[in-house]
Image (tube, rainbow, N blue to C red; front, side):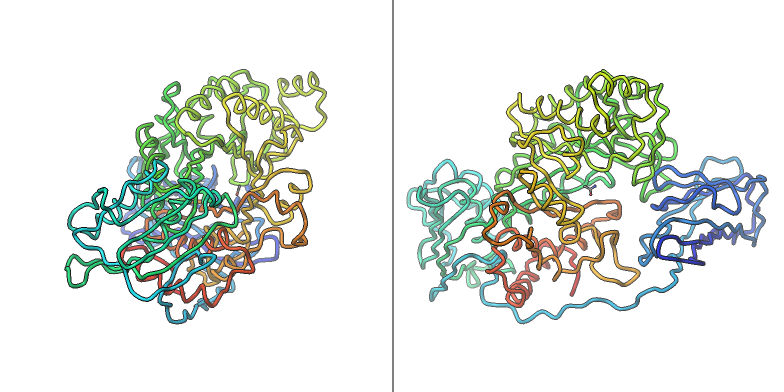
Length: 639
Ligand code: ACM
């Protein structure tokens, strides 16, 4: 360990903390012309830095000595700075990664980063006792489940009977899952004893399932219902595989009548802050389908990465998909010393969409505009930079150059070209346009924006946000797509009630949108943001800007609970989503640790009306599901 970086809280109030940052040279060589690069997500007040020259772009900070003095062996460089923040409580809020450049060499020198020295670190771990598993451990709990005596046994003669076309995806999925268990693929034969059958009297998404000694009946009126029946069948399989006939695969005999509370049950995955491989996404889709989610909301673009191939603009993925010390986009969140990134080709996207469709999941792409657009702007400056704009702003992630201009013709060329290609790739009748977190101050000092405001009679600069979004809403409508956006999509008051809103800051945002007549998909951070830490201990993975989010809190969620059960506004809730924002998700293990087991609680919250939920019963069924999570090798939080 030649170089070490320590961050210590020296003072804190409810709104501001002062830190000491110390770089130790523990080697035997002097560091000439050194520059430290480190990752810290909070904004360091520039005027508060006591020693050295500090720069910050997003979470990427650099520090060097003001007098360019060398750092002698066995000495250190010390500086202090302030951050306007409530007291930190998690190590993840400190420095995440660091490296050094020195001695006129371009090569990064590794720096050991010690966990931030917090003022009042919490030691305790929130733990959870799980009751014994039940005999049948379905999650989400079905509306009605009757256990019958006996079991269905898979043999060499087990086969699928002829099935309706709407069950084709489910058949594909079932065959793929059973391939892990059976010596030969599950055949399709007239004499088959697994029957997918249409029952027109069932609601869309509902299913009836009967497992008898010699037959399995899966009945539904739509592909959605067949998917849900298949998910239940897969959950009835034992957790441990065997190919030995004496331990043949058995399913307990049951009768289930079931249907979802909400038509929309989703998960959003941020693929911009950290990139997730196709393999990781498919493994996630397997789990989403198993737990009866029907929507994968794919956050494909953000300030820190553009992840979708667009034929018309190769620069979006040649430039915008990569971060690095020498790239137009600097490192962020992790990997401070190297090039990092990736994107999905159109072929990979089609493959994922088809894989999801077989599992009853629609994929809704998100192209986040007009904020969170830094990767696009850096890739296509000739189209997207308003050179005369002198507006001063800083986004929540510390950028001052990440918002599209509503007054540039290039913005609309960019949007229509990208949307044409995105709409062509994704069959879902929805497209998400983000619309979140456009900061105050934007567009105020741009002659072109001022002219547009005058021309349109706008008084508030945020009407310009509405101006862009209304354009996109109409453009999408022309392609038969409905626009979705985060709660700020209604800011500027220009989009119609055809737009679907995802309130995320709190429940009140959902109530406000429902009051204004919008349909909503509830996603309040306090219950559904799975990037929030699950416990209070300093080393717990995740963030806590909206509090901590233990399993029980997720399970307790009741959307718009303030309303009387008879309030018609409850009908405006189309469903619920959870989200995994990925600033903190720099490994597969973390990805899974943040998702599991909370994803299973979200599943039940989406599917079962509150009066049908039972926390103790859920915990027992969760216990039953853990052996499955173990079998497929998922890393989940224990307790
Ligand atoms: C969001 O969390 N910015 C939607």
